[in-house]
Image 1 (cartoon, rainbow, N blue to C red):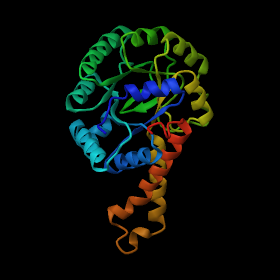
Image 2: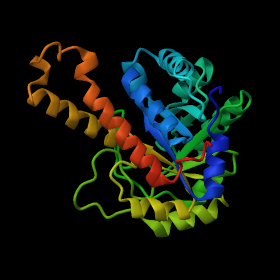
Image 3: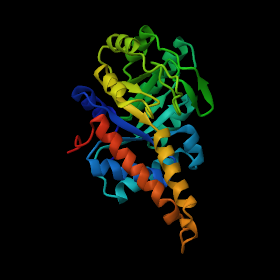
Image 4: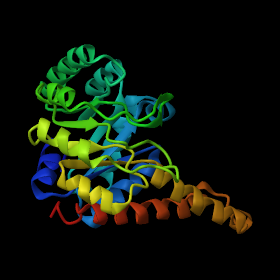
Length: 289
């Protein structure tokens, strides 16, 4: 199966009241683990890459080639989309050029008029090539690629304006943040989410900062239009924990335990296990059958 845009899988999730997990990749190992988990769970999946991770991996074309080559080499049969996460105007154009099947243009840092104009252009360009588009209204809390936001609550009227441009799915701030949630986090603002869902008239919504949000809140968000949940920090944390335990147990000093294929194995196994648990929790398991 060829890699696909995210539109069909997101629309099916929206109609079926479950969510597609969108896992950020950081390297080859991350990509293999995400594909392995999705295939094992028979789940559609979105592999997404931030601009910072893209730079770290050698550029957007390297990312596109890596994901597509692994997808083919592993014989993946579930629907897979390659998505740009929190893309700039220039970054979105570049990813469209090099073969991403989905892009996010995050214009939330602009005034609504400029956000709309730039979003309109990216949507037209992407759709002309069969590529899905996500846009954002209202900054998501925390820090992403050096951009920090306190986590605004998006304006439902502005959400409608961007949704009406024909965007495929929309990210909107509802109290969610990137990174680890603090102990005093107030939780998702479901009243605002309900207002946004009604304003966009059934347009699928995206929950950024999905790592660490209690499942009951994610499930409630799904009933209010959320059809894509972004995960990055959660996989990084389990990878770091498993790798730390391997080294602290001295296993890197046993035989050739320092070999990166052995050194990284516990962390990779932890990523796969966590990804499978999240896929099941969000209800997308078996949806690729």
